[in-house]
Image 1 (tube, rainbow over the protein chains, first blue to last red):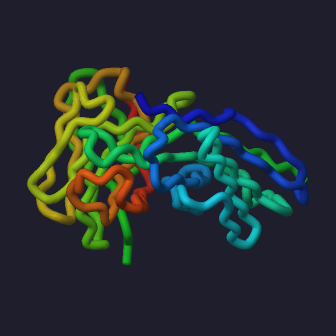
Image 2 (spheres, rainbow over the protein chains, first blue to last red; image 1 turned 90 degrees about the vertical axis):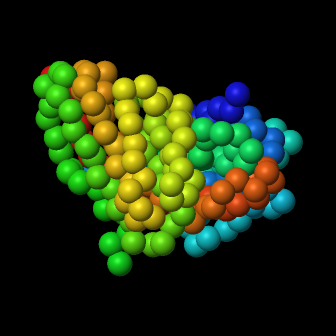
Amino acid sequence: GEDVEQSLFLSVREGDSSVINCTYTDSSSTYLYWYKQEPGAGLQLLTYIFSNMDMKQDQRLTVLLNKKDKHLSLRIADTQTGDSAIYFCAESPRANQAGTALIFGKGTTLSVSS
Amino acid sequence: NAGVTQTPKFQVLKTGQSMTLQCAQDMNHNSMYWYRQDPGMGLRLIYYSASEGTTDKGEVPNGYNVSRLNKREFSLRLESAAPSQTSVYFCASSSRSRWTGKPGATNEKLFFGSGTQLSVL
């Protein structure tokens, strides 16, 4: 079945780059997503990438996709304390499977120290 | 434009009590979802509704029921709460419509509510 794996914790210093990694299993996933959850809040869509792309850049965020290895990464440049949050990787499963929506990883807690 | 609104934000129940979590969205979205979030488990789908009038089970539906009252509202009911249902519950919606049979054909942008923290004693 589908599964999305992420490391659980990442700790960086303010100003450094953060790289959050994710592996997924459904090779038919057309879109892959990164969501951010700040303390006490719901998830917010951060960025997404279409599977025919290798890279997508949006200001401080860079998403890299290695479709052959089913590996997705999120790089945050010049990490700030406000980036401290839980980051979830998600894949869009096969549309003809019942009982599924997005499949989320367990989330990576990013801690940024000043 | 409020987005996805969930009520209540916090609730404490005793084992065996019942309650309904309410969710409403004002984005004219077709699909709505209920997830639960537990430490170390990430987000798990309880039920979803691909369109008004339809509901389907997700990964962890046992102990829950849902109602898609209209296009805006999707409620989650716990008939007899158990301590294992202590969790943070999130409602979400997206513009995704019925399955088209085309794998990954739709860009599934989910919008989440702020969550309901439920404790069952």
